[in-house]
Image (cartoon, rainbow over all chains, first blue to last red; front, top):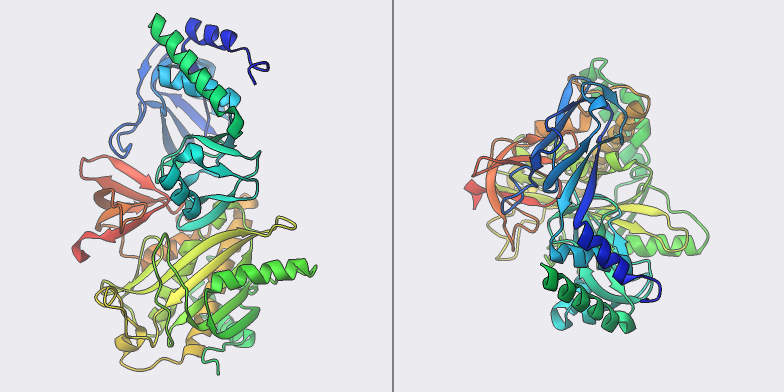
Length: 218
Length: 310
């Protein structure tokens, strides 16, 4: 694995530019009206239940139904396509980019996402572990739980419709868990980071290296 | 000897009568005949058993065996059991299923788009609520998402699960239902929060006729889902007077959740999360809440309990 990924290069990249650039797209067709300007600071949702909305980014109006879209991450508005202000846009049109400052933990997670097999959310929904997996995690810890292709690992819950989610990927251990039970995950976002059991020591080396390098300079 | 034995013909007759009533009340708002045609698959095959461990498990086995034999399961196949010995609710909850109730599930081949499929749990609870209201229980109400309550006590619950068969990858939705009809004795921990139809009406209910009517209402509501989806795909607005999805409008008319103070939780029984007031239901069926700190949140999963009933 260390032969495939140049960690020195990755670390250099994050040290020189410790930001994530999050693109914001039109959620559906409609007329757009921006609520922020370039350089403005924006906040992510907050509150114990994420009930305090993030900073309003834009309003999109389709057939007299206005919808406010708020920031899902904190940062600075790095770039806005001001040409779209007041105009009709198609769904998925890129509207702006938010520059999100990365914490050490996020950088480690981002680097790990390059090396782990990521298992994505099939739909926007809430997820929780299948009972068997949950009890194995509670007994031994996630990193001692090996999952096999075809195994039922999660339940996807939406509007009281529960759908079992089967793992499709290489046999491995659950290294990273990217969701919290009861918190919605958008379709395509990673739920789990899986790695082959024999690669766990290497993953740990990577984490130790990143922490040491990061702490020595920050 | 199996007690609950509705036939597809009986379900069809009930569905026909529903269409006739709806044609009158629709007043041109929607095409009732088209709705009936869309939903007529439900109950086209009915298996009645005297006892099963779990109807959902039986449904999964049936699908597997049928596919292995190179056949297709009829969408709308209903599996009924007079009793279930290992029925369960969501999470680790038990479900009490003795003689006298309506227990079972319907197999629905997944041919709805995701935006319509999300309404299946609503459609199922609504079918039961409309059925018992038709029998004279006008005080029956829906608690989001699909619990049927009569004067704060639970008459019926529904469980909807997805299932993918492993040979061809065909997806199904298993619509599980549990309705307390003539079963009026409950375990001690459920006695204060449960009720049966027999007690409310003061007389025994014909289980077979009740089930036929419920399945016809379920067929009708699935018909609405397909009908509204077809309209949306053609670029037409939904059939509700204000352009709202007809199923949502009917659900709202049967529900008393809006305006209630509630406690919400993903698993509200073991892990309640926060309290708030229900402001409404959004166009995707989500529950719009105002929390005690004044902020609003819309939930698309999870459960509520009314605060004045705790």
